[in-house]
Image 1 (cartoon, rainbow, N blue to C red):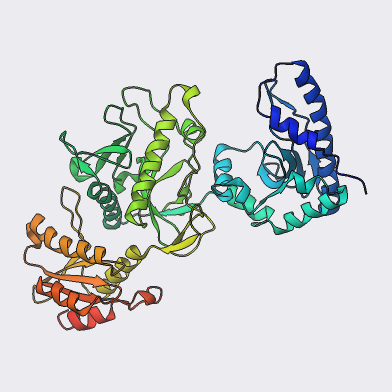
Image 2 (cartoon, rainbow, N blue to C red):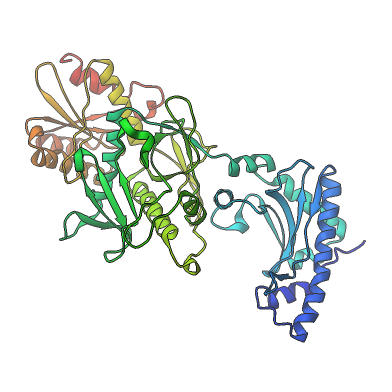
Length: 505
């Protein structure tokens, strides 16, 4: 059987010279000539693979032993396209690497930064564990014949998920969100966002500047609308200002609230950054190139779709820590975009959170790193929406109010007899959640005098211990449960409605 053409020397030379400067020393010239034969073997590998697996495809590549005339390439590679009309930007590649491996994978070729970002997101935190990368150690691949290497390659390709066309769709299809035009709902999400930041930060002695998760911000309410400025350090410049959208002039606004097809809400901002006194600002083109964030588009009320120069500031339907983390992610992206010294701009990290056009349902995916993948329900937002809708059907208006310090209640509504009900919703019945809820239900009326005479209700997804319920009720708080398992079918607050409210309403 004919061997594959690769030798242990090829791997040894890549390990020795890969990534190192090309100085034209005699030993480097010999290494360059030998690695040229590794490229010939790589081209042959690609050609035979194309002929057997993709008879309607084609191959392309070049001998880049020395990259841009300055360094040894740390790998060899050749591109394999599955058909003549395949997009140039996504290709199968084969080659060997300085790490000592044979590699076959789907990879991008000369694509935009946004497409590359989406590709890296699909890969996950480690390329070698990507579902469309396969790695074969040299000691296993070198004994293979030419035919065995091709058969192994085809077997790996057939296992790749997503498929070639599906992966291309994922990295090129910009998620389309739907702009929120209801003023009450839009204000609710803006206020929730700023409340989450404030409640999980420390107030400084200099006005209302707080720090959390390695960024600082200052929030004010000129003309009744939230305005917030963000920076990375106390002595650093303001990087971005995010202001509450004025729906009457939303077309000119740099920020917006939008939802995806499952009702998940997001705070968005355009990539244009104004002058902050230290630089002249950043255009949307520069932001797209430097920030490392994938863009989104959204559909306006008239059905038109905006351009894709909008970016997620915060995922508002998520848990508090994700809201804070996504905000921090955006602030750091603004810092990269404003960097005047291009030599200091490092490759942006792959976003930890992103909006995917292929996800469905009220869930998001936490990618495997040091733990297994798991799917998490955005329960609080779903539950709140169910209660708001049910009360609205009964002619009752569930209102949210917010203290200037950022504290915001889950809701208050009034019965026909004039009694006001203050509610706090928790999505688990853990001791920490119950302790927090009891504190909130007593703190909010103390902070907001308008709530002083409200009746307090705690809504939980499962009943706590009876002794704990009695202790909570002794503090003047009524405890009710809701049917979280029916969150997709409605009626989750039936006991609360029937027992406490229906006769009064």
